[in-house]
Image (cartoon, rainbow, N blue to C red; front, side):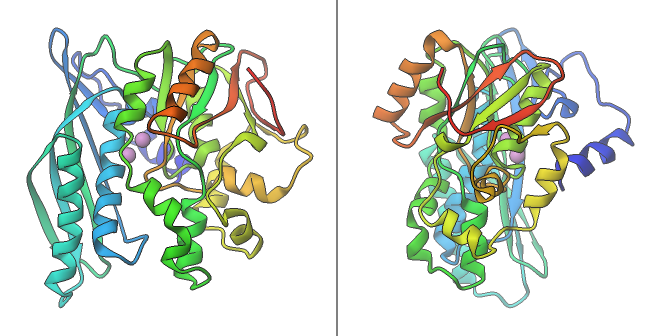
Length: 332
Ligand code: CO
Ligand code: CO
């Protein structure tokens, strides 16, 4: 569901509040956080979706990396995961085995274990996981802490929705989006570890709402504005080419429509780039609001380490009226 519809739906339900519930669905937190004892909180999240690549093992890895990502976005450590598998009647068991094996291997790489799961017959194949982890509430990162002047670091390139659409349409082969597949199956763990060493004010992972959509949510939750430096947003190979061929996924226009205070007046570049900013991502990177005094060195460590294509893609601004603006370039 798009962010706008989701907000409307949640508004129809009583708000969930409890003294030990430290996160709020309303502020768009990545995971539920529940205080267990002093210094220890439970982090819970769930995600599932239909295949976005043809290779079942890779799909399993991607689904798991994506589900685990919300725990990393909040600075947590995953402990257990439950499989959720919907499968069409008669589907080859070998395919299901490969999907689950991909998920299991990725969960092990994260240092967590598969604690169980659930299967159901479904018209369309779907796989995902419910992940449980822990976080120190005093050190957890939320989406709402961004401050004036914070530099926005993005740890992975953009374009997985566009490329998956092109793959489905037969315009590219799986081998031609190898960089995107590699990226989608990479855990955000090490990126989160690097960022935890700096003054990190807010963090979220870039998934279905697209880079601009998630940044908009961060800005709103933080009571701030934000500016995207479009020319510094890293894209996967062939992403722009596929946009020019009309390969824009369904969720893209929905994501764009949700950002009501979008200012493009300072954007004199290609409209295709704006399409990329709203491209729904699967297992995207972390979007981190980092203190400007730390951002250069944090970016350097990310690039030299787990995220060679990490980039400073914008800045948080306190200005009125609050809005999300896009300009060509910029610097901290
Ligand atoms: Co998330
Ligand atoms: Co999620």
